[in-house]
Length: 334
Image (cartoon, rainbow, N blue to C red; front, side, top):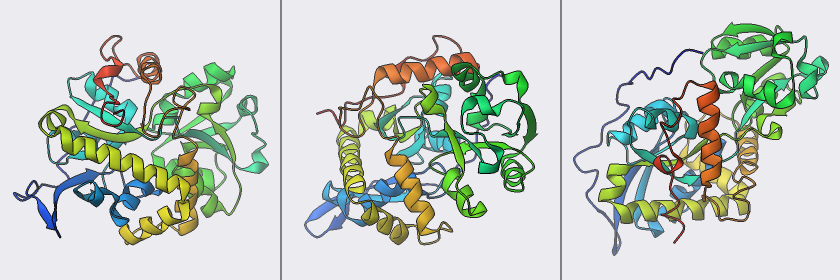
């Protein structure tokens, strides 16, 4: 596998000179903050958009503006350089940046189980890992599930040499799968799975990496160490409000989806897809280690397993990153 190369992306947006001036809402002054997502708005973002639409963030004294992103790597960089105050980004990507000296942490864990999956149409008869033998898969260039596919085959005892590979960019990978030119494809349960099932008008067979015991922390709310040091109260209020929004979205998912469409007015996703994406997200909000903890709370052991996975399969230098460099529960544990 090629060594990690991080391509610095251009700044997505710039904060105006008024970004940190308080906004008066009645008798209460609200602190404006920005939240940069990983990509376009999709179902996993339901709690944050609900928090904005339902006034949860305002109740905590925050005027939050959520914006779409161009990938977790870019989001992490805009948070680190101060262009954005908060971000919603992948834990594995954060670990890779931390190894290069970037200082930011997840403060609210959400996708604490990996959403990585292998999808296949029913007629391919791939119902369990062993059924992958002899089949052809579309492998997207640079796609995270493909990068740790060898971890999945090792965990499930599948002979990786028995699988045929077709390398392509991600749009082509998905097209080949829908056209039946590959037997299986990769993606995330919280994004591609509902979209693919809508496009093919079928129920796909799904092999989940999490079912194979693979622990890899995915997306959550991040903040830079420097911003947190200068604005600990703002960070604590944002974290607590986000947890409150998660709780409400889990309890009332339809209300959460309603809020999604009120905020993400330009989305091209259908309501069934967004509802399914959020339903899939709910399944991943906790791990065995955090099952009895409140939403957003993370476990150092889960982060260590994520780091170990990247050391073995993604060229992360051993010992370069420790869990306390990339996560903290301090803002929601009090």
